[in-house]
Image (cartoon, rainbow over all chains, first blue to last red; front, side, top):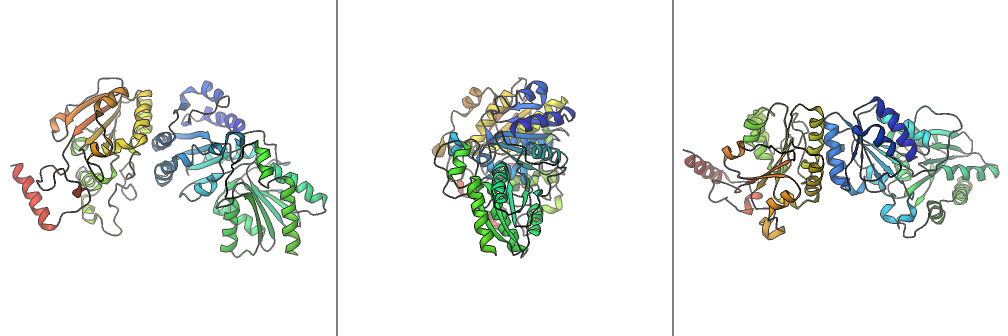
Length: 306
Length: 222
């Protein structure tokens, strides 16, 4: 996903000199092409995330379109107040790009995990959150971001996510239906989507056919859209994020607010945090997000629903 | 601030008051130079006013940045100064920070960033009144030798009497580096019972205190 981002970003940047990529001294091997093809649109701000974010806001206030790139928690929680005061409240068109969503950097320890970011970022005013699941969704996210002035947060997986959509999609503003079915709903956000689709294969092998949605843009409107689709049915939400305040929580709130009467089962990472080390895949299995456990949870909620 | 806004600032220059707690003084200056309407000064601190205890841009067009949380104005100004430099039209950015603000990590991150980008169009003025929120700066988190610190960060440094307008006006930057002006000031200058006292960081004067303060200043300026 990060390579897709760099490639697509460069494509737009070649036509828009106001786009600037600011990195917090990260992106080895990913940003090299940007740095060499458009050197005037590339700034390495060193290891100073807070000042980097305020600086990006200052540039945006002068008509530039900065994308602040770093990994995991560094461009989000590390500089949260700068995002809140200088980007969001000031309505400066900054895009925060975080690579390694969830457990993308599993082996590097919890300092490099990003599992609370959606929850925290969604409490900020004037901020659009994009959580694409594959490179196609990344490209559409960039295309949408650069035509809006709203500050945005782009949450990217580290890399290697398979292509999820069999039919090419044209917009990610609202949840994208991947499979249409009759046995309840499954919805996910971000790179965990590949596991969800594996789970769907298991579910289908057991004779059930749920509708499946990818939710690449997280806004009140997109969550309400999903909730309206699943009204009166049951829904399993899956995210590579803490269950406190993330995608699933957002769906619960919308379900209650709109009295949609959906039976919801949330799957994600517990509040306990991730103290083990291991690959993303190892940790996700360990934390109950294997395709088998997702399918199992689906069966449980499906049988209790009837 | 009066000198920067009324005398030094050219039309395209940008001024950021990073010490947002100096809102009352800033608003008085901004009203006199026409950035905010003079008549709204009277609403200061009232419910529903756009003018409160910290500088806020909402509803006050012309104020470049809301401040109040320290350490935001300088890095924000770096972004502006980079944009100005790229335009190459000689525009400058002035940032007023407090000395207590030099406790913030972002002040020193920014000191590194600005010299890296050789922002000779960035001028930082430190209000060196030697008082921070609870006590003196030197007894809280010593800043001295402050001048040497900025030198060591590769900045051009000037130290002046912050109450002397001529000294402030004479400051110019002939280097390729950013400039910091350490303006030595006395908090509550000219009012005997306020000078150098932490209490007046918090307390508004009563009617009679206000009268005697104005009287003292007027007598001194005769």
